[in-house]
Amino acid sequence: MSGSSLAAAPTAINAKRVQYRVGHGGFHASIVRPIKTGDFAPLSYVYDVGASPDVSLLGSAIGEFVYEMTSASLLTLDFVVISHVDEDHVNRLPALISALKRANISVGTLVLPWLGGASKLLGLMRLRDKDTTAIAAQLLQSDSAVTQFAASLGFRDVTFVKASSGTIDDSPAPDPIPDGTGANHVPVPARVVDSGTDVAPAHAPWEMLVAQLAVPAAILDGLAAEITKATGLDVENEADRRKLVDTSKTRAQLREILEVLGRTHDLARPGVTLTNWSSISLHSTSTNPYARHTVPEASALSFSVNCEHAWLHTGDLPLHLDDVWQEFESEWDRIGVAHEVCTVTAPHHGSQHGHNINLYTRFVTSAVVFTFGLTVGTQRGVPKWSKLLDPKPVMRHLRLHGALKLRLLNNRP
Ligand SMILES: [Zn+2]
Ligand SMILES: [Zn+2]
Image (cartoon, rainbow, N blue to C red; front, top):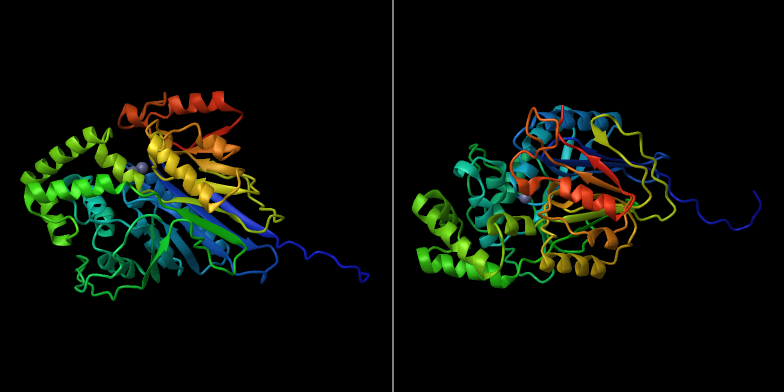
């Protein structure tokens, strides 16, 4: 070659990005590797690992993913991002960890939303049968108990994501709370990052921007005050939260308070809506604008896409509410990401209770992924639980909106 100055060749990246078909739930995995070995250390992460009520497809998806990790000779899954603490997004976390362990793969950082006492209580209320062994219940304990639970699973550390305008008491409670297995785990280190942080390691030509919206303090503080007035208990206190969900008398009081709160703030199903409002959205892509991601063909059980831009995950965000949408849009404008993305995972499994057509103007995408469940045995797209989760109206709206590829990852046999 002559001595003419040539721009450094862009780092060639092999990014395999898969949204697995699990029915109602979520399981995404990205494996980012250099094409030329040694260019950078590989990076891998998962966004959500849950399904409900049927976890059989997720079980096979976990197997498939661990096989991918092994084939790529990866020794660590760097991140598990939990969008929000609902069972259909977290319930197979231990199964994922066990499958990785059997393949001698360790886990790095657990990323999850930072929640105040009122939000933790709302999450606990959503658990059927007061099941304190549920994974969601473990992740709704005090922050220090969550880091202890993360330690018991083998994570190296925990990252809590908080809304920019939120407040936090990040000093862990002094007394470790037993995790129920009798194991005495030393809590792993935890850090709290603001919404808008890139949690990806600096060495990788890749970014993982996390956004966390703030549920208005007027709602959560009002809830906490009403609960104290009615029961004398404090939502910021772990033992009090347990008491509140443990007895039928206080549960009935809570339901009544929530009903009034819903009417006051014009929120339908306030328990679900407020829990989903805390979903972390994740915008992840290569930081090298010239890098080409080579993405393998889609398999029958998953969805892949040729992508040079980002994948946007939205958890169960109730974007159909104007307040939530406006907050979401201004947060991503503040963080400053491009309009073009490759794939959007439709909020709340593609339900109308989350859908906002403005999302597809702010983020111009070629594909939208639906992660929903069907009633077993039907062939006509009848949703598993309620009209609320029926994805058909949203699909129709998106077909009118433009030439989007709609990918339906349901549990149809
Ligand atoms: Zn969900
Ligand atoms: Zn949810």
